[in-house]
Amino acid sequence: MSIFDEMSMPHVLLGVGLLTFLLYRQVIRRLTLRLPPGPRRLPIIGNALQIPSKSSWVTFAKWGEIYGGIVYLSVPGETMILLNSPEIVNELLEKRSAIYSDRPVQITTSELMGFGPFLPVCGYGSYHREGRRIMANGLSSRKAAEIRHLQQQKMNRFLGKLLHTPEDLWSHIRWFIASISFGVSHGYSVESLDDPLVRLAERANSEYCMAAEPGAFLVNIIPALRYVPEWFPGAGWKQKMKAWRQTTESLRDEPFEYVKEQLAKGVAKPSITASLIEENPNRTEEEDRLFRYMSSSIYSAGADTTVSAVEAFFLAMVLYPEVQRKVHNELDTILGPGHLADWEDLERLTYVQAVIFEIYRWNPVAPIGLPHRVVQDDVYEGYHIPAGATILVNNWGILHNPALYPDPFEFKPERYLQSKDTGLNPDPRQFAFGYGRRVCPGRGLAEDSIFIAVASVLALFEISKALNADGTPIEPDPTFDGFIGHPQPFRARVTPRFPNVERMIPAL
Image 1: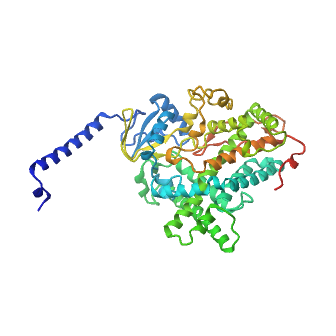
Image 2 (image 1 turned 45 degrees about the vertical axis):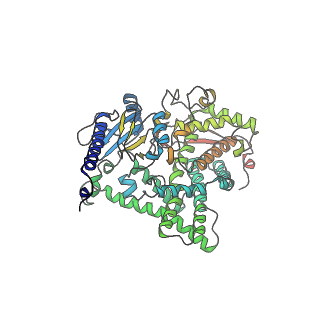
Image 3 (image 1 turned 60 degrees about the vertical axis):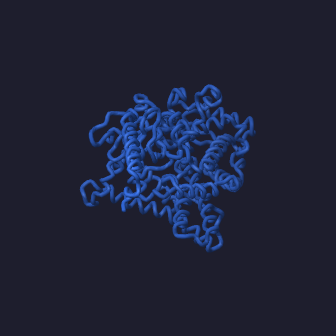
């Protein structure tokens, strides 16, 4: 007996009519909604050839000027929605975060390289929520005093390195952030950048950034290319992906195994990884896998971005000596000459705080934020945003919009002190640490590291342009590049402000 035999004809007709109405309404809705405006698309390939592989955020900002705050792009197999407006970002990624918190699966990074299960790029769901819970516990306010003590120890060593070998500035910056990240995540002491785990982590970050750059690998635009055999002409990139996947898996496992060995010997230092292992002795295979990815996510998610911010600080001080003089004056007046700041001093150091805000704005560490994915059809101001679309936020474009930040290419900390109630120069941190339910869980760790670096370095040192052999200043390149925005390599002079600086650095 069929279901229709059990139903009366009126019920059948009513059901058919209702279904027809719903289908009709869906068709009409789709026909009446418009996709957002965007650059002209070519048949089949759409905008694939128009997305540059370098500094794409500059092109995206120009498209924003032409087409508005929401821009539609199309590449084979993928719809992309580009956001250049803070109001639209807030409406979609914050207020509608329930449907905008997923991540698209990027062929190179997520699948071929194996980065998919790391917290910053994993899909939204129970796995992501459990990962954020682990991060929140490991970086909670209960752990703040312990973490800040570690940061202060590493800062004291950083100051000593600047005093004795200032010519190695870039290496010292990377060491400072790596030593904090690995100390928090694995209780691991980093003595130099030659450390094998540091080399591994930096290689993994570098490979990820190269693979994630928009337009860098055609397979991200034409996913079917993943099935091209390795021997096929022009498919050498597949060997590269295979080697890079080995790096990713090593980053996941080697630091975790180190902590297990230290715990077995009874000599492990406190860390997020040690707590996970000790508190879960009977963990399942699935839990063990989760813990490995989450503990390694602390370095992979935050180290390179924080390095970028500290590098930008040194470059800004080289290019804007008048800003540095104002910081020196504030530190000397409020704390006393040669005295180092503590975190409790931040509220009093208003100009230092403004300098840090401007570092976030002037060189956003993620010029294009990590992409989001909308999980269902949505509508914004009459524009149809189709389910599955990749949502890109042009952080650089927003933070260099002259309507929000006048003279956007100038480093001007005063903008945050003089225009608090004008609607201009908003706090740039809202565009620096992600959006909605994908806000960086390590934000506090990064902010603390940047504050202690800026305040401590300028309390004791002066930063200026390096000199040629004939004594003329070397002008640094003020531009930034890369998926994580690093300045072009430059040289700087780092000189003590006081004759007895060595005695002002706390004992190591």
